[in-house]
Amino acid sequence: MDIHGLVIEMKQLERRLTLYEEKYGILSEDFYAALSAGKLEGFDAYDETRTDFSRWKGIYETWVRRRSTYGEQLQQRGVVEALRVHPGY
Image (cartoon, rainbow, N blue to C red; front, side):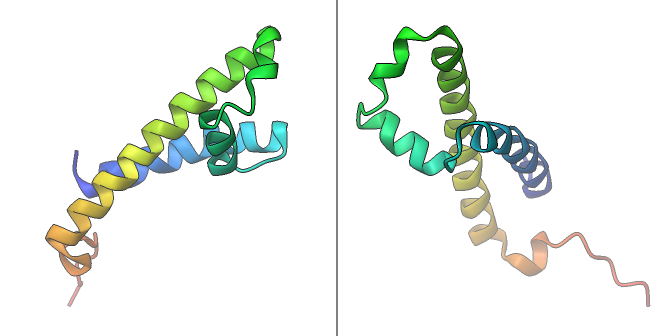
């Protein structure tokens, strides 16, 4: 996937993450850290949170992978080459 495609996908993922952040009142990185540390196991008994947390975790992990790939590609190509600007002069 090229840099532009990564940006588009990351923004779509961010919109989905925002829904969970607004619903549960914390940022995704804090949710993921708490989940990874086992601090949210008490919520496993509830179907809605178990389902939401599973989806939220997957979306966040996908976003992190895309962000990493974006950073690698940007470092290789450079900002100037990656910009989708074509001077009209």
